[in-house]
Image (cartoon, rainbow, N blue to C red; front, side):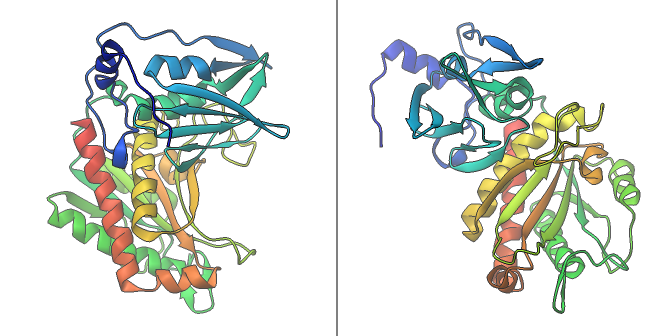
Length: 337
């Protein structure tokens, strides 16, 4: 652990910052800092705008460390609570308080400066660091979407079908949310085929405050396992691992809120399950880009991994995941009040 002392005047200012990276991932005050924020310089590289990470650290009163491991350049932003954000040059993921998060563009290193693409900062990192930027929002009506169904069985491994697991998890989540006082609508309550448009239509008709789509995953490589959550990538920047650009107008009013929700959710799921962290990711899934509310798609594990499939079939493990999903909604509701 790294320890350091701060002048009393600086410490008092830091306590007013609405930073989320404190112990346990709890949201701090939404009050703005008393003094004007320090400016963050920008640079243009290959026609894209980048912010300077050292300036981001200065704005929030974080310590900044740079190091080199072989040929790899790494920088770390360390909060007063010693929570770390770690960025590696040329990589499209970074860790945020230990949670893996995807970037639309790899971090760059130019002229001794670490650079973060501007939309990665404004649409993902900044809303998590400073929740006061997000509009206040009532969260009462949740639409829970059990992925696939009917003729569309989703992923499969032996006799285990994704559509059935998705529905079981959706029912558990809906039951817990209702007990906590939320209004819940489900896109399906039985084994029926639904189009993606029909799922989005439910969210519109019910005037959802949040849209949660529940899935499980599969890959040919049976060694891969873990939990990942998805939100929409911003217009004009690529989905994770692809060159598919975000559509203009797709989910743009809610991307920042969705990013915060996804961060809360991934942390809660990992803590509850002990599963491998496959990260908060951004991709053009129709049900999240066409949602009329903040939206997220969760992949709760890989059916093609023997150990993870066994876990996903256990009622107590399902209960842990369901509670974690609901806890993240509670935390988001409290933060946005």
